[in-house]
Amino acid sequence: MCGIVGYIGAKECSDILLSGLKNLEYRGYDSAGIAIGTDGGDVQMCRVKGKLNKLYEAYHSDPFDGTIGLGHTRWATHGRPSKTNAHPHRAGRVILAHNGIIENYGEIKSRLVDKGRSFDSQTDTEVLAHLIDQELANGASDLHSATRQALEQVEGSYALVIMTADNPDRLVVARNASPMVIGTSDGDIFAASDIPAVLEYTRDFQFLEDGDTAVLTRDGAEIYDADGEPVERETKHINWDPISAEKQGYKHFMLKEIHEQPARIIDTLRGRVDPEEGDVDLREVDIDPEWLADVDKIVMIACGTSFHACQVAKYAIEQVARVPVEIDLAHEFRYRDPIIDDNTLCVPVSQSGETADTLAAMGEARERGARVLSIVNVIESTMARESDGVLYTHAGPEIGVASTKAFTTQLAAVNMLAVWLGRRRGVLEQDTACEYLKALRQTPNLMEKILNRTDIYEQIARRYSDAESVLYMGRGNQFPIAREGALKLKEISYIHAEGLAAGEMKHGHIALIDEEMPVVVIAPRGGVYDKVFSNLEEAKARQGELIAIATEGDEQIAELADMVVEVPEASDFIQPMLSVVAAQLLAYHVADFKGTDIDQPRNLAKSVTVE
Ligand code: F6R
Image (cartoon, rainbow, N blue to C red; front, side):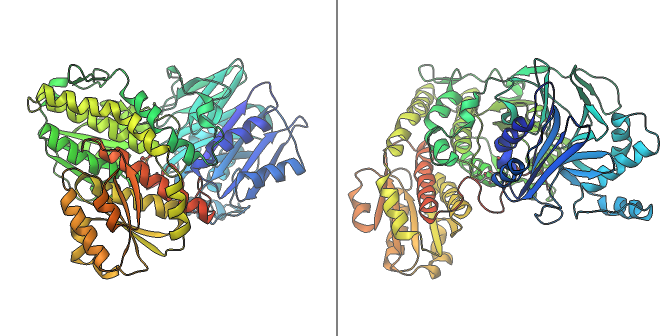
């Protein structure tokens, strides 16, 4: 939700701000703006409604530059997308950009209006600019003090970058429940919502903690904790390659990220699995292994695609390690008075590590006594830092708003966790563990086979892109893949889709099936193949148009289905990681045929940092 970038240094910064925003556009893209302290001693702003290309056009039609500035790309929460609601916001001398929500903004606004202040926008953010400006007018010694005094009056979440029109030598930043990093490189100081924003300029980052504020000058960053005391935040060197945040010749980030999956799974397994010994090395997870192996139950929480990974995990962990696994949508978990105790392991799963609902649910579980082992992609994200232990997924930066490689690497991580637990709990024989891990190691090669075929998806796209609605069905650990396939199609093609457990069809959904209704059946050979085949026949008997994701060479299915997408034969343990690639490609090609904005679908944002 919203991306922020700030710069102070020796360079003219318009390109740094604009490219930083481009790298953060996945966080929101309904309006954008920059503010730069110019050599003439004033601050100039450019704001637009719409995506960043509009900001580029507007900026280049009347350019300005300077060595201090800030920028913002927005995902609207309060106030519709418009130029007036776009950030940065200015009140008097104060100019700022904000990510988060000021919950008590209504009350503060009325107070400020009573004091004679007038507002231009409908945003919650503008009250912050006014509050800080008021503190300065009331005699605060400098921008940092004024900011701290203003923040004492607000409730809610924020990442902020702030400057004043009369001081071109200082940026102030603040963080509370919205991410903010500070990057440094040879006299250039950057502030950003996320690492990829400025990865082409620096790899050295400090991660602010909740309640932190910082003063950025050309001499460096001084960080203060929630009590206003100077504090050191460790500088971490990030090894992500800036090139991996670019499209590399693919038409969309999503397609590039789908094709990257074999490599990212290799990265996720590297150094952790030993198929010869039948074991997994999780020494990096900073939780007492004896406690971990002995937990009474596991509670997995997440949202969206990451929740589908939890659903697959339930099958894998219960079968392989015989530990009960409860799964919950994070936003439901928080409000249902869950039964948790100090023998519960809570496993939040998240690409960004910043999803507000998942963070809150994890806090709830911890308060009730659980220990937290998160499965997260973004290094040093809030979730990673607030967990007792972290199993990183190594998917690299995921830019496409629809999640792909984050999901399959999450599945690799839960499979590793399942084998680790199974071995430690004495319920998984070494030979069987060797087989599981060999299968896991083979996954990237098997995925490549799926990625090498494209014509079938193009045919499907031509035939079904006019559909109004599509049903996806699967059973066992393919049921979550039916849901994930449906979510991908909805997100990027705007076609309504629903993913159901195939056995549930006859309990209601079958009423929807007629010759207009494409039905995607995920039916690779394996555990419940025969059952799914029966469901396929039931759908065909109602004249449904059948698209099957099936094992290569399956003639029985080929005879019945109208279209077949083949996936290689593989063990049930890894099969969801293969069939989902077919489902991702299917959704991608339908959306591409329809010409939708695949990397930035309407109304969505990559990282949902508000409740
Ligand atoms: C769908 C998608 C979302 C996210 C969800 C959770 O393609 O990307 O459903 O999976 O918003 O986000 P994370 O994993 O960052 O917690």
